[in-house]
Length: 149
Image (cartoon, rainbow, N blue to C red; front, top):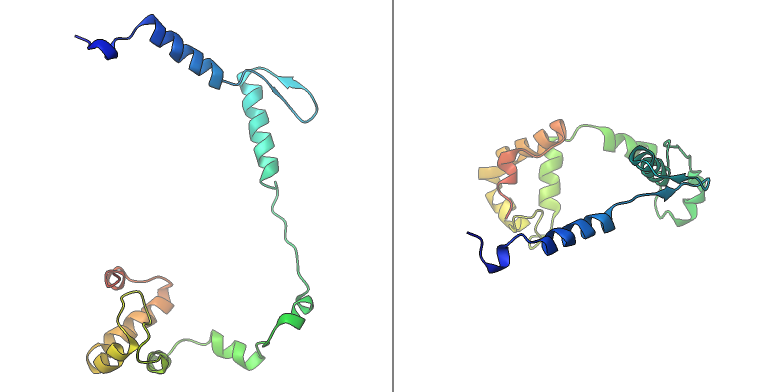
């Protein structure tokens, strides 16, 4: 049996019908001033309008990079560009880790680089492998993600 406030009365159903009617779109006017009244026309006009907001066909614009030159403090040389494209080596990884100040944290786990340097004889090989794997496949291994706090 329904409790006092849970009864479905005519007042309740009228309220629901009124609310539905107030939220329904019965007609819409398009950009040409035409009034659309059928559900299909209304839907098509909504889709057309929102597609036009999103820009339609993607376009490619080229920027003359010489305009940015006055603000560039350093322009990457051909040599630097080639070094950036070469594979990462074990020596590169160790050099980067050991180049970080002792009290700085290289990652989200909170361990300082001093910890990594002190523990390098124990963890260096596995850590190097994990980092090289990241550069090889382009994503962090699940096991490595578990280390984050």
